Image (tube, rainbow, N blue to C red; front, side, top):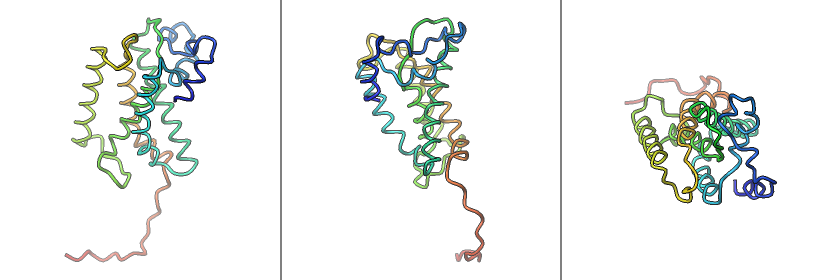
Length: 202
């Protein structure tokens, strides 16, 4: 992310032409902002916060896959989380001409997926109905909404917080990581009946 931000500074308009504008969903100008906005940032504090978040939540999610297939699956998951976050934000603010940039929607998608792994060292996902998972997810979304409505974030005094994008990215990651793992994770081992099938001793 910091490297991309350096390149962003070299663009003639500072990358604003690649930002996402919600109203573009209705005026036919939606491409490419809905995809490229997640690779842009509004400043060093902004990019640093998202980079730290990605470093914290990406590894457990990435480890759900293996090899090239797993790497491609992880990258696709990250990108789709970011696109869903942008689209969700755009649908809520459909007439807004304000631009949105940042990878936080995608990062929140990773956070949502990582929560399904809480306390699981074997890489298995907690079910969607797990009380600990639901409690943690609810608390995070409440905090996210409060921060967004209050508008407090270090270094973000001059810009709004797209907390709705965070929520859409989070929910997508939280709800779909199981399906994603089945599609891009390692193949499940075939049934093996060569072991000792006797009842375990008491």
